[in-house]
Image 1 (cartoon, helix red, strand yellow):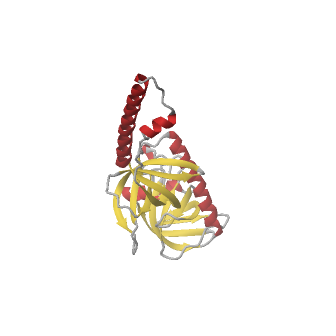
Image 2 (spheres, rainbow, N blue to C red; image 1 turned 120 degrees about the vertical axis):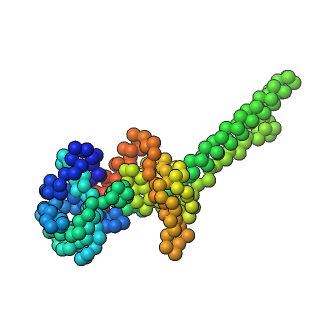
Length: 266
């Protein structure tokens, strides 16, 4: 289930208001661990139950993130540590509200997708160069045709290509990347290429066997993976079309369902 739109009139709803509402428990890296219902909130501890006894077990003191889904309330994002974990219930202690930045990064899905990344500036540059080359080519073709017509001749396609070769179009530089997590508002990618903060990127990937091209803005400077030449880049989406948004949400719902089913088998 994706985060719901916030209701500004219920932003400060007490946690007791979410009792019997569904919730998700995720690791610090956004891997879904379990889903259940909030049974109660006591002494800064959450109690989460699952009558089907399918909660995945988590070790004591493990840091987790919790998202509470209210029927008519705004969603609530929390963090805490596992105190007791069984297949039927889980107690989470040391509950804290997440900060704005933590909320943005919290409820993405951990994924493993291949993608291609291009700088938007490089795409614009390639398009400008290609337009200029095609314009010059058209002028040369017109000049050759006029000269041939003046001589009472009509050039064949082969003769024309011999005299005026078609221009070689510039291809924008692109870089292979791995998409490590994905949400409705952004993604995290891993690549050998370094990207600056506030750099506009075009990310091409495949979702549900369909090609997707997403415009992004880097919001976090590249950070190196430990003992690796790869860099981690955080991005937020910009100018997402309705079609892109529908495809993205469909993929996220399907992938989250898969992760939920997997968590219940653990």
